[in-house]
Image (cartoon, rainbow, N blue to C red; front, side, top):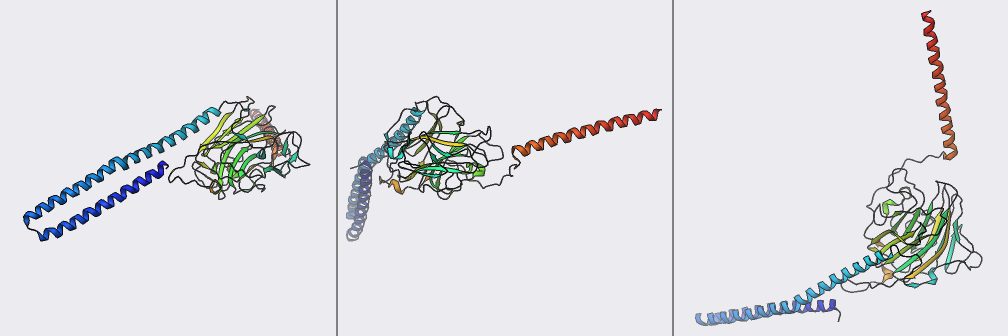
Length: 415
């Protein structure tokens, strides 16, 4: 018998004993009153003393059971719950500490081929086993290109096998590059969602999704001051009711709070750039290697994240007025082992029935329209600067002529 059941059994036993004691006390009091009416004064005193003694015996028995049965079980049960909770927190903390500065070539758990892809891709034509392509995606022998360096295109790949494991680790080797210098966009996203392969405005996928989105945002759409630079990595948990606010770069619904994420300069690198998403024990952690050191660096970690099983992995990318190449080199998924501690009644909830939820998210705020950005572009801005400079020179020239003319007029007056 588990300790939770034993605890509830002992508590029920204690309640039954209390009810019996109260009933016996009540019966003895009634019986005493009936006898008192039939007896004289001396016998009344004797009966009262006998009933008082009986009540004391029942009360002592009740207290004995309370101290030697219920309270020990209650104390042990609470200590067991505290120890399990503390042990789980310690295990999660150890896992976080062990993964930082570890080699990107190390792997944990069981490799799941049906959720992974690696070069050389052996698909027929444009297809890849276990994966569906979307939009402008093309498949080569060395990479999967989601978008070319072209304006206003979208592409993606979606795993067509649902994930039926609760704890997992996903490694993605990617390359984002282009020839636009300091202006590039828009970025890519890694998904774990209920409805795959639905194009939309959020980095090539649908808005109001159900599940998890990891955003590799390369362009700042927010015109005002930002608390971070770009490219920037952040996350979002959605139950289908939240809107991803592109104008605010998703900060209104950001997992862990507005400043939970990390800057990651992963563009135009000659070495491999990688990201690891780890969801174990309701803790979502993101690690990156964008410097080519071959070691993971923690980007963010948030606990209290609830995700169901049966969702699909996907990777999408999109460009707008600015563009980039978005390439996927490889995807590897590993099933993780984790002992989940059941609280309360000990009833296990079906992981497929869980609702996407996060305890720690950005504080809700209303959308405020930002002043529109300039539509001039580089050419228009350059022309405007040249015209402004020419106007300044012209004004200065007229000013010099005017001053010289005044000086000549003043000299003539003296003659």
